[in-house]
Image (cartoon, one colour):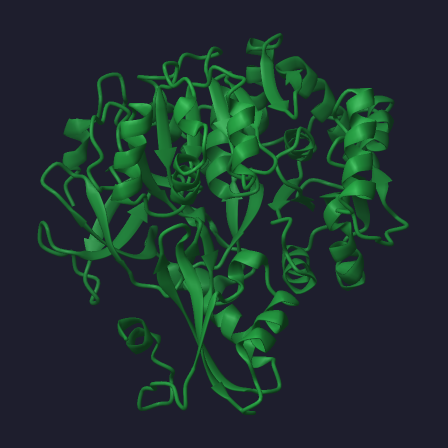
Length: 551
């Protein structure tokens, strides 16, 4: 379709970007830490590190990884919440020429085993709180190098001791684990400091991340994102922010987990390139603590999901914060609800901008311009160098203003799913990525999501895949059939509902929930269960989730 949106870009925003302007993400990193050396880079739990300190610590970690015999292309997993250790580990892995595999810290043993086995990870950096999960499955994987850390390890000595003691002995948040091969993160940094770092020969076609997603259907798959894919989206995001961000001066609140592709690209990479200070929030679910923490800083940017903004608006004290320095807030990961957006502007005085993306696009595809004055319900314009077309079920472009499946083409589109050529071929044809989302375009070139073609359930911005839920529920010996769907929810966007046909009449809702807790991360656990005598099926016996949703 004609790129009518280019006429409505804000002044100073280029219509195209050069994805080859840097040789690799390491190139971007080295230029930024040199340019902003003495300025604060990350803050967490009251402790800050400068760009030059991040440079030195990540270099030590890279040196350590190289000394362990890991070679270019080997995958290393990172399983932790937002801590200072995260960017140190992330950039250390990249600087060693290795591939980053981000892992949700809340994964169950089954989920973790799948991702480690599928990615062929050789190493993992993990917080003590979750190490017991790794200890249950490590023997099934190729992981040989384990680096463990505690929540307070990067803090000043007294606070480090107190924080780690409270977490382990008072709150009892560190279950016992057995990983005899584990090396402490602090020891790895010391060993790296005495080692010899060799800067790898990198080009932007090498793989940087295996970022796991469910794609359109089924089991979680690793989206292969090269340095060039990530650089492209980093440049696209930077260009969209050009009219409003002051390099080296702005202060960003990072509440979304950095292991999520949205925060990874926007908060971790883009704002590092732009020299921003980044406040890492370890536990954004503690909303009173979150409000108390951000009250200490004159912040300019807040990135989040609809549920976070809604939660903040309902947290006492948030409305009393000083918003005079705020430049913009951006919502992604899930649809921003109109009621939340309108209340957000009433409280903060700022528009809650909405964007759209997916892991397979590294992830940003569209975003509302930073000069938007009112919430408009759209996901905005395509970012520079991205093309979009809307097609019908036969693949033909739809008429102007009509809904169709959104296809995306651009330098940020992934190479494919790791070791899954068939799954890749299903979603990428002639360079166009099929998103599985139905959208329409208005006369200005703004896009609107109309419906989801795929059955993925979006809970607080995280994908939940019905096939996985149904498989786990069906493992219960008293279940005959199961079907999972998403149902609207004010706080989380959607929640999981499961329809079940019993095999034994003694089965209860609580039985199934307890069963699911053993196999599923919290946000995937069904919140509603409905027992039925039978489930609607097609003439070939396929359960019709669509009919269940309509009901």
